[in-house]
Image (cartoon, rainbow, N blue to C red; front, side, top):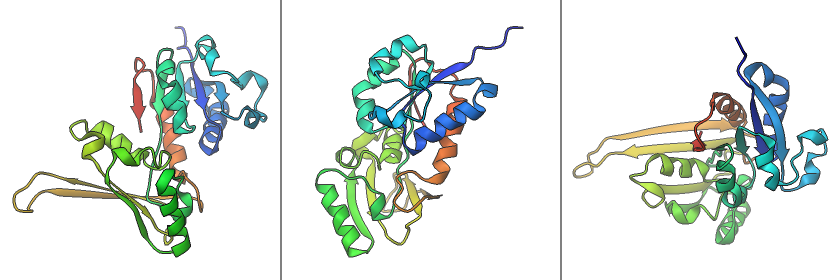
Length: 233
């Protein structure tokens, strides 16, 4: 009986997560039917530690690489600029996690950057934003992806119906905390409410929690091909 073909995996981004996934694919991928096809990074110089055959220097060459699965762990602008093209040739995993963090862990844009700087200076717990999710996404694209995944998973609410609350808290320097509250429609304030809290250990100032690394690796193994759709985890 012919063995199933190994799935070729491409990685967009070579930061903490990209390096971890590349190492896992090289060390543990073959017995699982996974092969590292290439790694691409906005800064091609960062790929110097990889063999030349594993460096994809031009995303325009992606169709010729025979890749089956593309994992995006780069800046959000990469998915925005190239996601549609990638879906035409391979499955595409949008793998992002956002948590309430210490002020140093936020990568804010625009006016939110000033709020984060003020939170760092004050040394006190600060609510950076509370309101509809949609306007927050471009202000903290690296930090609101759990919220964005919830909005996609709940199409009845979407980005305008989901309420986002982003908190900078110096008392949790090495944790990322996500609290999800689901509330049903009730009468006179009496309604069903379910709350879950997740605490993910993280290095001081890190954007990605430690447990997220294993989560990404498990998701990559479970993705067997889904016809060019986007997978959330």
